Length: 130
Image (cartoon, rainbow, N blue to C red; front, side):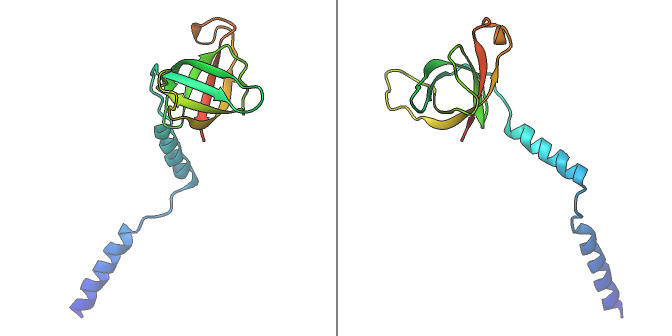
């Protein structure tokens, strides 16, 4: 009989260590923490070349305002549009013509006057890597 008692205690301990399902609120909070970590922006001025695809080709060589693992932010007065596919060459150097270019998409354009303190014609542009 004492063996059963020890076994029952062992089973009880094992049951306590089984993770219980998280509530919807705790799941959302955990997802928000993961998203916040993955979208951490670093203020970094890197030379970058942004090129659009298609007939109305735009080519911009500028510097980034900030970068993250999922994209970057820069300022431009050129007529980029949200949803537009682009190619991004980070740490661009004109003397290296075959720089690695990543496919990306323009996801947001901040058109507020004087965006970033650069004047009214310049817009802040958010790019997401695809």
